[in-house]
Amino acid sequence: MKRQLPPILVLLAAILWGTTGTTQELAPDTAHPIAIGATRLAIGGIFLLLIVLVTGKYNFQNWPIKTTIMASLCMTIYQPLFFSAVSITGVAIGTVVAIGSAPIFSGLAEWVFLKIRPSRVWWYSTFLAILGCLMLFVNKETVMANPVGIIMALGAGGAFASYTLISRTMVENHSSLSVVAVVFILSAIYLSPFLFVFDLSWIMSLRGVGVSLQLGIITTGIAYFLFAKGLVHVSSSTAVTLSLAEPLTAALLGVFILGEYLTSTSWFGIFLIILGIGILLWSPKQSPSKKGLRMVHK
Picture 1 (spheres, rainbow, N blue to C red):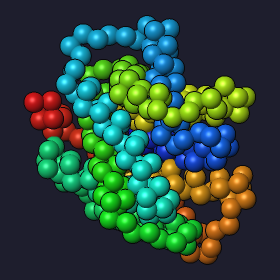
Picture 2: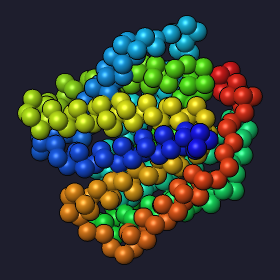
Picture 3: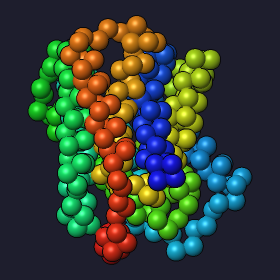
Picture 4: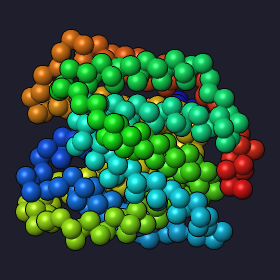
């Protein structure tokens, strides 16, 4: 069971991320998606920093400043790219391209930079999960294959994969809690100008406060802490593939909470996602070698 715990932590993080869409649907109508993203990072970062201070797990000796800046930039870039891609090319294709491309980018990055060739099990499970995502969203709306939107979605997928790979190197030598706290505080600072561009009056309403706390503490603070904790013993490529549980969770919440309807094709897509994640979750695990990790730090 101990061997299975790290991937389960990553899976739990993805499930929490999957509640983001439903929570946003419950936000006030005046809440802009990018403003929600910036608020989410700010609250999540502050929450994590407070936990670090309370628990006393702040040891910044030999802290990798350049690596931290790179990780925070990746997370910062992901937010506007993903939201913009979805608005330009639609939720369906934007989500599939962004989330579906992330595991491929992650696997290729490990192969190129860490010299770790993805296993056959990873390829099989990733293919099934991505195919499941495609089938899940294919009938949800009219597909708008806007080239600009697709490029932005690919950029979002690459940014998330890069964040995961970089964070994987940081949690090897530093507290997972400290890593995510510092990264998200920096990301929130980078996105803070958006807080002055969009209307933030919605935050003062009771519903706005609830949505902000849910997105900041649960889907950002706790979720990314679990994700970073799992990354200590899970390769970045495996972690990103497991994160495909996010659209699965979002789809199921849409059905049972928002009253959305799924076609038989979408339900089969859900089955493929579960199958792909299940194969990866219960297969023998191999953590990236220390040699490969050292190559990233150089």
